[in-house]
Length: 227
Ligand code: SAH
Picture 1 (cartoon, rainbow, N blue to C red):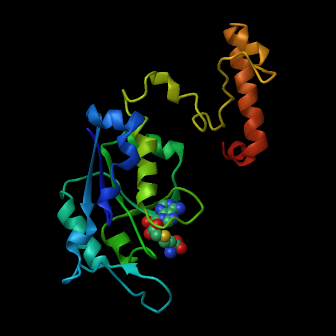
Picture 2 (cartoon, helix red, strand yellow):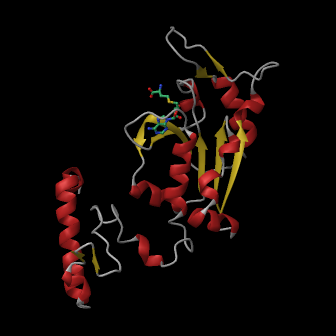
Picture 3 (cartoon, helix red, strand yellow):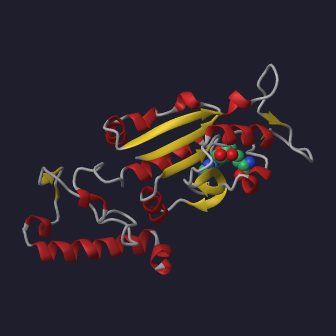
């Protein structure tokens, strides 16, 4: 079973939104599993301290390598081969291609930073890979970890109603998705594009491909250059 293990200072945030709707139903049906490890359980002293001031000075606090290392060592089996992803604004960007690759494996280990982040030494010492969910800064890795799980879980076999419904989506063909319409046929004077009402599947497919290309060219020309 695909399994996410999440190292966090806030285990009570999970499953959170992942416990509802598509991912929540898949969780209760046993298609995937999630467990959390409280990093603070390995904190130091009476106050279970997990962070300290940055070497070299500067603002904020840094999660200690010894604390996080102990937490990882205690919380994972030695033969666990799942990728260990450290949520980090400096990481390689999560993409649909990566989500699909992760979904096809055994699961993920997700490590959530807080404060200014984690002591750099932990990355190489525990074979972590930094992953980012976009070019902005969050206050912690937990919501980013949920994003990673959500993007993967919906791709697991049996999660989405129609198996096919994920293959035409944004990014799957290196393009943004074509626009959708549903009833009513006319709404506030706005009509559904006529071609979609013809039942002519070849024409509809051609229209959708052209729209996907047009929208991608307008909004994300970088995606076209990439392929
Ligand atoms: N000082 C860091 C930001 C720390 S934000 C910097 O400038 O890069 C605190 C934590 O939030 C990080 O350790 C990371 O786990 C998480 N985080 C912030 N932005 C993120 C992003 N774009 N993607 C994934 N995780 C992020």
